Figure 1 (cartoon, rainbow, N blue to C red):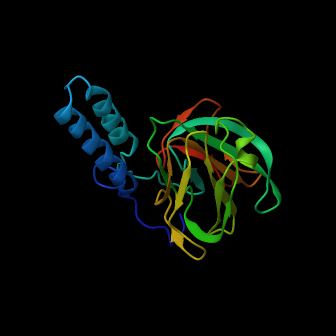
Figure 2 (figure 1 turned 120 degrees about the vertical axis):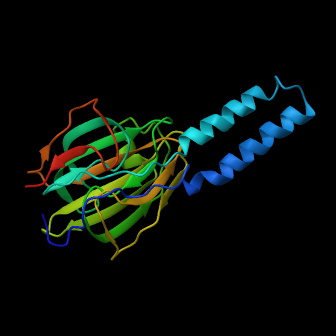
Length: 222
């Protein structure tokens, strides 16, 4: 383990729900109460259902990252939809790409897959096709972070918007240092994360596997 690696321990989420969800939660609550007050109680049931959906969507639990040399942790909760050799369009190199698709029932906080420095950030406007499709990686709106680990290895982590997701949020910039598993962004209402790794990285997941951010290992850097 690198001498600069912080000790193990839980990294915080946001109490109860992510801060990104408070406006949606407040609005859905007010509408449900208003419909119940001014109309029939039965009419308000669909609006309370929306309130419950918003509450579960924006949940943001604390996570205790897995510790180990060279581990690449999942940056998102979801399902592995790609493990393949692919061109990294941001660093213009051949890589191993592992993609995680988040549906509307997954936790949508995004966390750093490695411990290292952010060397670059790129935002690209695009379309909003189904994020489960391969073409989403090159056609959809996306935000890429280039990490360099303490051992000098480059990892690119890309937030990709989806069919319903229309808002990518990223809170870090060039020069920031992130702990492995540290929260750095959020995507609203379903999307995917693409992780580009050196070709000699060893995958630790299979297609279709369900993974959790900061908890499950995607690959090991050699």
